[in-house]
Structure formats: C-alpha cells, structure tokens
Amino acid sequence: MEIELSSFKEKITKLERNFEPKTIGLEEEGFVDLIELQARVIKEETGRIWLEGEVSGRVKFQCDRCLEEYSGSISKTVRLLYDPKEEVNQLEDDTFVISSETLDLGKYLRDSLILGLPSKNVCSPECKGLCAQCGINLNIEACDCEKDHIDPRLEKLKKIKDKMEE
Image (cartoon, rainbow, N blue to C red; front, side, top):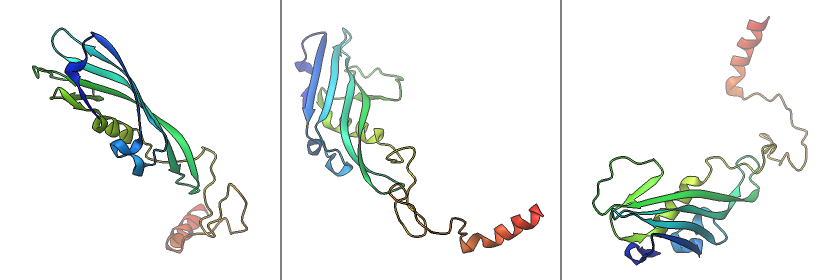
C-alpha cells in the first residue's frame, strides 16, 4: 500500500482507508476483520508532510489463563513525518520519520498494530484459568483437586517456613 506524498495538493487532506489484514502481513497475528485507517495529511509550508491518525482492527486472541479464544479490538495512533530537508532533531517516541516521498504505509501500520498488541492476553479480569493439576477450565466447572498441593521442589521451603512460625 504505497502512497505518493506529493499527490496531496491541499494543506489538510482527510485519508480514510480499509484493507485486508493479509495485505500488510497481519493474518498470522490474529487480525480477522478489515483494518481501518482514519488519518489526515498535513502539508507545511516548509515542505514537511505529516500523517496523523488512528489505525484499528479486530483480533482473535487466546487467553493465557484458560486457553479459550476471544476477540478484542486494537487501536493505535499513527504519526509519520516526511521532512525533505532532513532537519528533524528530536520528536516524540511514537513518530516515525520517513525519508522518501513514496510512503509504504502498510509497513508502518503493521508495526503500529503489532506494537499495540497486549503482552498478556486475558479474556476477562475474573478469569480463573485452568487447574494446575487436572487441567480443567475453572471458569466452566469446579474440580476436586487438592488445593494445597505443593510442588515437591518447594516442600523443604514450606517445612522451614512452618518451623519459623512455631
């Protein structure tokens, strides 16, 4: 998805695009519906061109606690700057600086959405997860496993702790 920045003639141009996740390599990341971009392109008199907006999409996740599938939304701010004079010294951390008038927008949108993915996927804050002994989903049913099961590698530490409490 390449865009020629010189094709924008107005000072401020609205840019709205929808595209399939596979067009920017997001199908393996779990993105299932169209990716939406709502942005504006701002041309400055200095020659700089800004692209600022929101990119969003729906994702299928697998819960890290109970292993059930659930879906959620990802929305990320995108900021791109083209500076023909390359005088950019310091910008905010979330701004990509580009050096070409031909912008491969898909690459930047992909990077932004991947960085927006959560590091821990939990279907709900109340998720009880799986039983560590029998593997049953505790959100669906209870199990009869011993709740005070101690890992044999830590049993000696428990004995020391019990002695200290006496």
